[in-house]
Image (cartoon, rainbow, N blue to C red):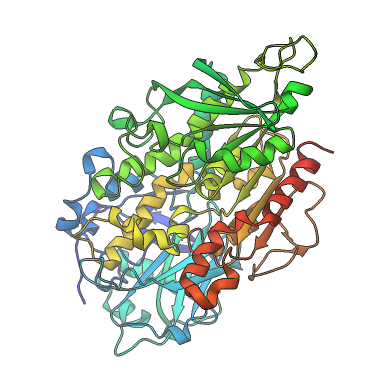
Length: 620
C-alpha cells in the first residue's frame, strides 16, 4: 500500500447525540494521507479528513488541505501562479462543492455487473445531517483507465441525482456487494493499519456513519465522509457582482440598422457594441476576482426586430444564449421563431466565443491545455456578469425607434414616434451551453420574466463526465503527468471553482426565489440519449428546479413527477427523440445518441417553444 505524506493541520471526529461533528487537533510533525488511500493520496475524494473546525464558518468546518497530496510532477504542471492548486482552490472553504463527484480508487477492475447505475446495495449515500439516504448514480470512469492518462486507474465515480445538500455532512459507502477482481484492501484493513491518532479518529467517525446506515464495517470496502459547502459561499459573491453590474450604466455605441424586406417577418437587424465590466484576472482573461475591480470591455451585440415592431411597436424581447463554440449569429433559427410570435431577439457572444474570442485570450476550443484552464473557468463565471451588463444595456435602449407602420406617403423604415421595444418584458432562451449559462443568469437576474431552454442540464463536471466532449476535447485540460485517479481528483477541484457559474447551485431560485423576487417560469426540452449534454444532467436540473416531466417519457427520470402539461406556474421539462432515431440501423447508436443533442430541430420542439411562450410570456 502506497502512503504519501503531506503537511496538514488535522481534523478529528467525535460523535455527539448521534451526529458526527468536528473537533480540532494540533498540527502534526509528520503529516499523512487520507487513511483510506490506496495509490493516490487525495482519494477517496472529497473527504473531511482535510477539514478542521472553524467557529466562524457557516458549516462549522474549514478545509485545510495541502498541495502535497499531488505528486510533484503533477503539481509542477499546474498554473499555480494563476490560482490553480489544491490549496488555493479549497483552503478556507466551508466545505466541498454540492456538485462534487465522489471518487474511489481500486487496485483491480470492479465487476460492472455488480454495480447498478443507482448504486443498489453496492454503493450507498447517506445524509448524516438530514438522517436520510441520498439518491445517486454511479459509473466506472473509462477515461481514467484509458490511454489518455499517464497511467490508468480503476476509479468509481458517484454523483447525486440532484446535488448534495448545502451545509450537510454526507457519507458514501462502497460495500462488498461490488465485486473486485483479485485481492483488495477493505475498510477493516484500513482501520487496523491506521496508526496515527487523526487517522484512527476519522475512521472511527466513518464506522459510526456506516452503522447509522444500517451496515457493519465488515460489509464495507471503502467509504468517505465530507461536508458540503454553504450555499451563500457560492451564491453571494456571484449575485453581488451580477447585481452591481446590473445597477451600473452600460451604454451602447456604433449602432447600425440593417432593414429587412417589407415582406419578411423580421423588420430589421440592429448591431452594435455594449459596455460590460470584466472582473477576470490575468489582464481580463483568467479567473473572476470577486474582491477586485473591473476593466471596461466593449462587446458586440445583435438585436432582431420582428415585423410586429413596425405594426404595433413595443415588442417583448428574447435574450438568446448560443451553444458551445457557436456565436451570437446562431440565433437565426430562434430569431425567426420569435419574429413569428412578434418578439425581438437579442444576443451577445459568450466570453471566448465569436467576435470577442481574441480579446478574451482565445476561443474556447483554443484554450484546452492545462496552462489555460483559468480561461475556461473564468468564461463560465464572467458570462453571468456579461449577461447582466447586456441586459441592462438592452433596457437602456427602451426608446429605440427605427421602424414604423407603413402608410401611404410614410416610411416604414423610419421612426414613427413609438418605441420598438418593451424592455420591461424580457425572457431568456438558450441552446446547449446556452441553456447552462442562460439558466445561471435567469436564476440570478434581478429582472427577467422566465426562461425556455433546449438540450440543457446542470452540473458542469457531471455533464463532462458523461459527454463525448470530454474524450474528444476537454480532457486536454488535465496535466499530462496526471494518472487516471489524479485527473479525476483535479476535475473535482475544477468543479469547486466552476460553482459560481454553474446553475446547479441556484437554478431552484426560479421556482423558489429569495430576496422577495417573483417566481419565474422555466421550461426545458431535452433529447433522449443525448451524448453531448447527457440526460442525467437534465434529470438533475428537473429535480433541483422542481420541473415535472411533460408528455411522453422516452427515458427514465427518477424522482421527477410526470404529467400531461406544464404546471400552472409554467414549469416543466419534456423529452424529444434523437434527430436521427429512425436511422440508427444505418448510422449506429453512437451517432444516434449524438443526434439527441440536435433534437431541438424537430418541428415538435418549435411547437413546444411557441406554445409555452404564448401562454407564459405573452399570456395569450
